[in-house]
Image (cartoon, rainbow, N blue to C red; front, side, top):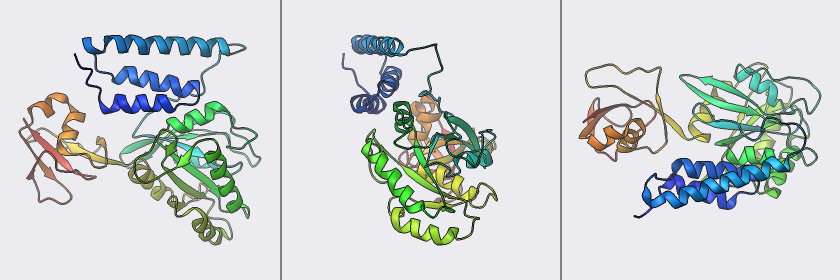
Length: 325
């Protein structure tokens, strides 16, 4: 019996091949086990993956010294996607997280206040995005579990301080340090496990001279990623930052649906990838809908109200879809 391995499994398998740390290998193996088709033709493969997971966990357990502690590299993803904050010391990451979510990080003027990753849920309109504050990324403090978290994320939010006269040097140093550790920024085209999409939060735009430094920052890194000026203190630019995280960094859209003859609940969207088609959406919502789909009607962008659309019609943010089975 053929294995018929799906794209999710193959992507996880590729991440396993490219994994550098044990943490990354374990996460990829667990995803391979979760996405492999469960039938007689894959029984040996399933057993082999389980064996490798067990062996790797034992190696990691034996390798740890001292009392048992929580594994810092495992942050369960929640919401529309997981965005990791990256930046030099005193860039204002913790203050930004506190402003954008209900998380309570320690905020202080001295560097290296953040010592452990701290997740918070950002509420933007009717969706939530998981934003994770990280310790500053420097050659003196970076550890293997930090790189694992960054590579396993859905996207990176680089945070720089517009009040800092050395902002350009720090931005270039951070990007060079990331690339030296096999983590590159790539916002266009297909990406490997070590290439991540990124957005820049130019924080503290309320400080004197901030917009002059912003123009210089755009000249240095503006061709590599979008830059959003913002202020954790005044909340300027926060809404635009959330919007860009959802639509551009995570590449998501919101779609609504309801049974024929009923009203849509606009407080509970289905979160889908950009480029999702009608049949893709049907599979995401329920496999039986996709299997029995006769046609669909769409209210939204690029169609007239209630237009009957083909199965390969590409959906847009805010579309309402009614499936007829």
